Image 1 (tube, rainbow, N blue to C red):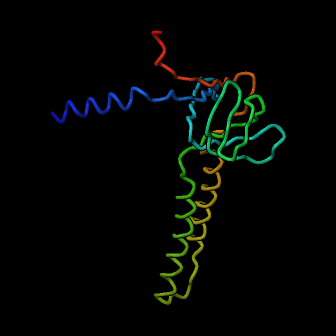
Image 2: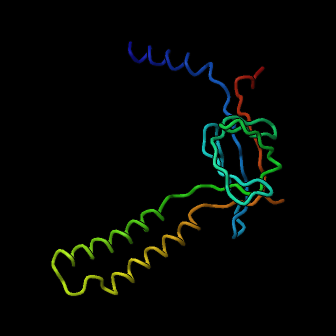
Image 3: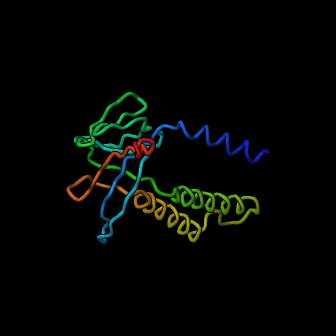
Length: 165
């Protein structure tokens, strides 16, 4: 009985759902492989407009044929986009934290044990290597897709309710 009521509940709830709009981005990687990425409503969108120096980060609220609407009521044409940033894994924060903590823990240990040498050269070298690798990883962990002639941006409206009408 519970199974049938759940099937009835989900069937009535999802039959009146609205269509999902998708911002579909197709681009080629450095090695020539075609890649695609999709942005949905209420997703964080990092972009640069033509003439901008810094990235703007807003939540994507709605999409039309060639317009993007953001949470701050800003409307942007797709043709005005210069760069789209696709966020990757946040590994660089772990490297920064590991470099700082390694230095702090070793220095604190030397102070607590009253060693003659408080800061070791090897610890400074290891911490600086971790910090520099964090800077490098921070730059390459996010993909920066420049809008050029080989990049395709489409706004798809997945309305499957009227497919047989």
